[in-house]
Amino acid sequence: MMPPEAFGWEIWLYFFLGGVAGGAIAAASIADLARDGRERPLVMRATLIALPLLALSSVLLLWDLGRSERFLNLLTAWRPTSPMWWGTWILIATSGATGLLLLRSSRPAARLTLAARALLSLNVLAATALVVYTGVLLTTSSRPLWSATPLVPVIFALSALSTGIAALALVSRAGPTADDLERADTAILVLEGAAIAVLLAWLALAAGPVGARAAGVVVSDLLVGGVFWIGVVGAGLLLPLLAVLWRMRSLTLVRAALVLAGGLALRFVIVAGGQAAPLV
Amino acid sequence: MTTQAVLVDTSRCIGCRACMVACKEWNELPAEHVERTLPGSYQNRDDLTSQTWTVVHFAEQASGDDMRWLFAKTQCMHCADAACVSVCPTGAMQKDGTLTYLDETKCIGEGYCVAACPFGAVALDEGKGIVQKCTLCIDRVEHGELPACVKACPADALEFGDRAQMVAVAEARVGTLKGRGLARARTYGVDELGGLGYVYVLQDDPSVYQLPERPSARPVDIPVQARDWVAGAAAFGLGAIPVWWVFRRRTRLASEAAEREGEVR
Image (cartoon, rainbow over all chains, first blue to last red; front, top):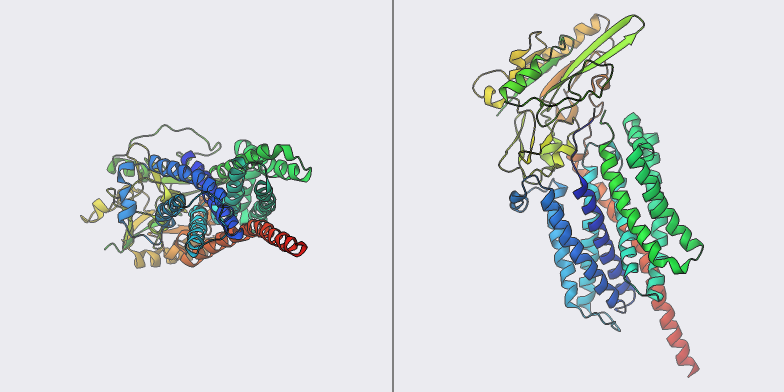
């Protein structure tokens, strides 16, 4: 039995944009905390990436509603059992926390004040919530690809970090910071690839015939499978990892663009693929 | 508060689709363009939509010269632990006893309940911008009338009454069917998702009738949801470790270099 479509292109595009925003903010904040304030320029770049993406996300989500004029119903209701209700407030809170980063100077500092530490930690927390809720939004469903395992939030979290760091690399000049970003990104891509492999194996082997069919859609459907192998695995994982392995330093920007393309492809595969598999 | 349920006795169903027609008529649902995508079956419509709130699933089982024809009407099951109600971010989808109903003035049409429903029974109506599904004909029931599908059934396959009584009838009927040699006969919906508002007598496994063997409970299982949050946050934390490590390493190297410089001087 094929269920009706629930989520369209606006949603997978939002999952990607929100992931890039959250990943960039979290990675830059952690880098600045680790470097005692010397990465303030990176945090400012992350802020300038994230704020427009978060604004665009809100527009996409409003546009996606069947009755956009009723969006205030989301804010006036008390619905703690609904991850989407939480997500509404998380998106607002993350935008606010990221906006506060604009108040900081963009010049490197020699040390971090307590207030700066608190603000950066708050941003890491808000970005985590933003990225993880988009995954929980999918696990709380009946579609086997999304709900048979707890892995969609795991994969979204890792992909948000890898794409967020790639976005930072795109706007960073060559230097030690760009090198560090690439090193961290490589480690995260390995984890992300492992998580995707575990998801498919779990579905194929331990989630019954319905789970096996959901995994089958991802690896063999003409459209979803094509985007998976070419976009997610090829462009998003293998090429960026090979570029590092072969030390192709001149390709840093191409590599970052490939990671971003892979992240976008991943959101499409999960959202569209999850809805292309039967419930029974 | 509704305490009634519908009994669907698939062993009496003749697959005439009168329930589908009656549902369309009472709820003033238009006809839809149909594309056949289930070759080799007389089933007509494939699945539930925003304009088709009930569908009789056909299972044609041929073995040699024998042919077994199984039918099961499906629609919103009015689950006690309703996924759509749990995930609804505006409180538009609600429970009233056994009834699951939509407050159309609150629905924003974001489609979360569509994703959550394990029976594919809620669908977005693009024209109205909100979701639509079976109402259990509450506009008939509260005036003492039977739901339209039950009223129309010519084969006594549908019965409407107090839920506890419908469950008892279903269990007795399964006993009769087993006595006639139908070893796989069973009830469905007595306990699934806290108990459904449609209780079934099945002659075979639920999947034969396109019913999920174990309908997903993740939308209503808050402890499992909490685990999903933790798993995602843990993965984010795991991914943050390399970021912290490479940048911390540079801080350490820089301070070590500064110390060495101090010693040289």
